[in-house]
Length: 484
Image (cartoon, rainbow, N blue to C red; front, side, top):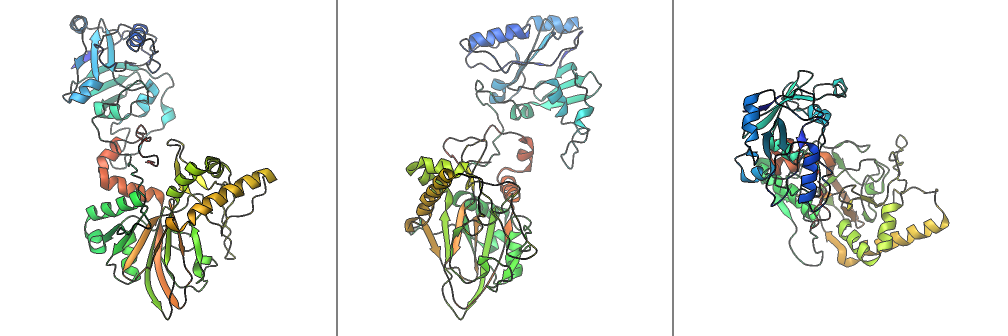
C-alpha cells in the first residue's frame, strides 16, 4: 500500500488529467503540473486541474526514496481502460492522484460513501453536510493498488473511494476522453416514428408475459420509450386485471379524477373526455405542474352503437417537422408561456405553479422533451402585445396544420382485451364521436416512476446506484431526444 502523510496541511488532493499519447509525468507541484499539461495540450490551460497551496510531503524516508525512483506513475487498476484513466504516483513527497475528476476537499468528504455517511439500506446521506468544516483538508492519502483510494481527513473521518466511483463522478471537461469501464445508465432515446400510413404492425406485447416476466415488462417499456406507444394483447376484460397491468410498471397516479378509472360517458367529471363527442388530438394534464407521463386505456365494452375510434399523433415528430419547415414558429412555441386550467367540477380549479410553453426544452439536451397541447384546457393569456399574439397564433396554426395532416394520424379501433398505453409527454391522443354506451378503464403513471422502472430493468439497481449524479451521457447527438 502506497502512503503519504503531509507535514503541512494541503488544500486538496492534486488531480492531473489524462493526456493522450503523452508519457505520464510525476509532477512536483500544481504549477509544474499545469505547465506540463498546458504544453501537452498545445498551450491550452489545464483549467480543471485542482490547485493546492502546499505540497504533500511524506515524513517517511522509505516512501520518499521509493517514490524518487518513479519516472512513470504506478498502475492502480487491472482493467486496461481504467489503467488509461487512473494512475497514482509518489515522488519527492508529492502525491499525485491522476484521475479525471474535478473536486475540492469539501465535495470529496461530503460525498464519502462509507457506511457511516451513506445508509446501507436507504442509500441516503446520513449526516448534516454543513457540519463539515469549510476548511476541511485531507491529512493522509493511501492507495490499495487495484481497488481504491483511502483518505484520512483532518477532522478524524476516513473515506474510501473506488476507482469506478471516481471515474463515474468525475467532473466534466472537454479535454478528457471518456475511458470509464462502467456502462452508461442514461437511457438512449432511439427516437423512432411509427409510419401511420405504412401498414406496419403496431408495437405490442402479451399480457400473460408482462404479468409473469420482468423481461417482458422491459420490452413493453422500451416500446413505449422508442415508439411512444404500445398495445397489450390478451388482457382479461375486467378492471382488476387492467389495474394489475398498470401496476406492473409502478403505482397508479391519483389526480382529481381519482386513481384507477372505470367510467362511461356520463359527465361524472366535467371534462370533454367524459362525453361522446369528437376529441381532437391533445395531451392530458397540461394544467398540472408535472403532467402524467404514461396513460393507459382499456375498452371494456361498447354496446348499442358505433364509432369511438382512437387517434394518436406523434408530437415529437410533428415538432421536428415544424423546426424544419418553420424554425421561427418552432422557437415561438418554445418561448411563449401560457396558462392552463382544469375547472369543470365545482371543487376543482387547477393551474400549474407557473405558465408553461407548448414545447418544454430540456436544459441539458436543448431538445423538446415534453409537449403541452390541449386547446380545451388553455386559459386566456393576457400579458402579451398584439404583435406577440399574432406571432404565437401563427406558430400554433403551423403546428396544428402538421398535427392534423392525415399522413401523421394513427387511427385504431380499440377492442375489449387490448389495452393501449402511450407517452403523454410525446403522443397526442383523441377520439372520434360515438353512439351507444362505452365502458372504459385505465390510469396514469408518473414520469419518475416510469423512468425508474425502465432504468432498473435495463441496467440493474447497482449500476444505477453507481451512476447517481452522472450527467455526462445526457447529450447524444445521434438521438436529440435522449433525455435520461
